Length: 276
Length: 274
Image (cartoon, rainbow over all chains, first blue to last red; front, side, top):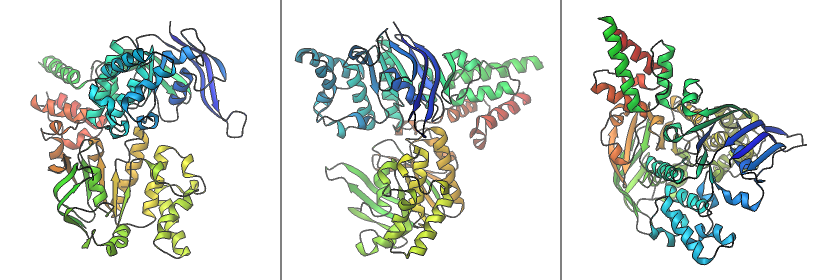
């Protein structure tokens, strides 16, 4: 069963002079095991959307259902793990172990079960056991973010929702998170992430949801997104788009450095042949 | 303007953060500093206006030694720092009040303070938000307030420590444009980042790793240095593509790699030649 949003609208500060419409007529379906990217400019409504998915915000009109359940129900909350932008804001325990065990303990799992889940979660994000006794606030940015992800994974969610998980990290930290998320997805959990970092995330995304001024303007596969010339694009895809605009017939689905090189050499060869 | 001689610094827990750093920041220069997390970039930034003092060696700001407490007010007036998270830098209830904090502390008369605040608002385009609370602004505007707060003290040198890393790309670009404008007007800028793309038109870049300066030079030579990846830095994918094309005899000049448009134009030119 998926997460389904039907005709969802949401405004902040409703019924006050400051009322602002954040999302309008959202229809969206997120299937189990998908890797979904939510893209759009700042203020488009991306973060609002993530908060509607797990019941932190309630839709003004329309419905949200998580595997058929109301997202404010305890069981629905267990199925959706949430990781916010700044990992440090959601860490609060004295040790990494306590941090990750907090969720399972609150759901009343036994000590043994909790321990099992903590070990499973750190393994999923490729952290070593030695980290469990450390103070979460002494960790590097990438490690902190992985602990935040592990805390969400300890409830064995079916969906992991993240808001800009690699912002502010250096290239090494970014790669750690991307690798961890890929692994989480491969183990069967759906990953839904808001991101501006196309260079890092694009290769992982299977489905893209593009939001503009509170409305979904594109929803579909990465390939379709590229073919429809949507923006934003990763830098390499932007070059490909500019080439097509100049009448050079390059494949619109190319967005990696390696593929771009191959494509450019192919076109060059074809043009040379034509001349002869 | 700023000179570091054999500067070393370790944190109280013994972690060495800087080792024998020798560096001169010239007046009017745009100096970029890059390096992965923990390479010592931020520690270096804090040394540049005396927030941290060297344990060995010395840091001189226009001849004033940062270890001399009597010189600190003079140093702080010359060099201002803007940090990563704007929210940790706000002190006032309104933006106007926030910007007045610096000049007030320099003991300027009220008329002068008002002038400083107005100038800072104008430089950053924040006039219309004057009476708003800094906490109601977006991240990008917040960084502009933090920058304006420093500008209100009219420093000659501005230090930026990863100020765009929490911002979305559009807001980041806007903040960087404001900084470039200030640089053109004569401010000395030290810009710390781990995003190489922000340093295309820096005058000079230094690359740090484990508390040491590993590479130094103009952007073009630093970007094409093969050891960058080993230093924990990711080359922009566009530069990576340009480097690969070069090995196939297609040379995209450095300045054409800055935008997808000029890159594509250059490729078309190369295609036509064939």
